[in-house]
Amino acid sequence: MSHVMNTYARLPVAFSHGSGCRITDTEGREYLDALSGIAVSTLGHAHPKLVAAIAAQAGRLLHTSNLYRIREQEELADKLAALSGMQEVFFCNSGCEANEAAIKLARFYGHKKGVETPTIIVMEKAFHGRTMATLSATGNRKTQAGFEPLVSGFVRVPYNDMEAIRAVAEHNKNVVAVMLEIVQGEGGIHIAALDFQRELRALCDAQEWLLICDEVQCGMARTGKWFGYQHAGILPDVATLAKGLGSGVPIGACMTGGKAAGLFGPGNHGSTFGGNPLACTAALTTIATIEQDGLMARAECIGALIRKLFGEALAGTKGVAEIRGHGLMIGIELERPCGELVGKAMAAGVLLNVTADKVVRLLPPLIFGENEARELVDRVAPLIRDFLAG
Ligand SMILES: *Cc1c(COP(=O)(O)O)cnc(C)c1O
Image (tube, rainbow, N blue to C red; front, side, top):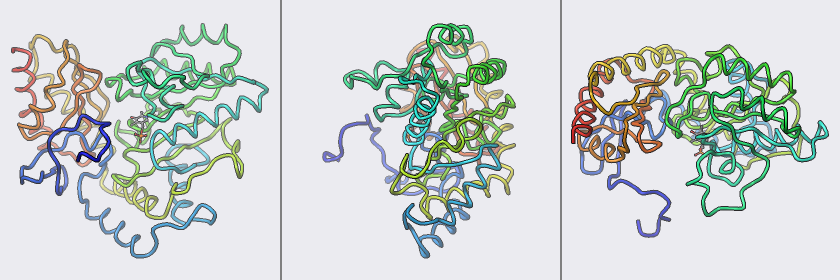
């Protein structure tokens, strides 16, 4: 442990195995997993179809190179294009890399239009990753502190604020794109209003800006549609994916359509590991299982059930600011910082997370069922009540 760089305030627990919505620590204690490793374990743990597909692929071929055609990558790109309405997909290994590709695309697009210092509008409380460009796009001063100089070329506006974006449009002729999460995850489960999304799409069209949706956390069926932007019936020019895409096998994707399609050619971007046969097989199997088992509709209705049950269990509790969410992306905002609830929930056998200081965040695997939903609320609601009473 002492040789692991100290970049996370880790909880004193390690896990040895899991099955479905349950995960077991090295002491043999079992937990209900309502976090999915931060929206990653889409199919829960040790899903038999995923295990079999990964094992078979490992026995055939793990890695070749993007110097060659990769059959699994082509198949996954076709599938993602069909599901998303986008046209092209670049594969990488994580969310920040997917967003780096999106940022590079936006700048490339700007230069092609003759904009010498292309600028991207980003949102307050946004989270786009930890690399220099994505950290600069992220709307959290704390995570940026100490890493200046930040990458230039971003202007920040409040979330859900069309007027602020229009004001930037009037004064800043260098804007080439707007980048946002349709549901902000790390920022505390904030949802972009449908009208805001549609007006933003129209403004991006009128201004010839790229609309970039960071779907790293809210994509992959978590909100009840494949991608968050589909609830508003809009189509971005760029959409990024990672987290839940491979259900635990690292893979990211930057998808382009509209004005952003066809921008990159050979030499403009790359990745050694990106889209290798193993990762693409994991993603293809994740998608096929979501389809076969109807997990998208389930995410929507189980998420609504969890919110309803928490609403009932916490009705009249002083100190609960709001219970909100979309599908299996749920936030319970309290009126004061509540980080200690993470440990209390663990002691009660539940994995969850607190983000933005005051928001209990739930990101259960998409296989979560009604029984798990009830168990989750039965175990966690009393902890919140006790915490707020204390
Ligand atoms: C987690 C996250 C990222 C960063 O993903 P990494 O795989 O950790 O680089 C980017 N955007 C959003 C919305 C995220 O939730």
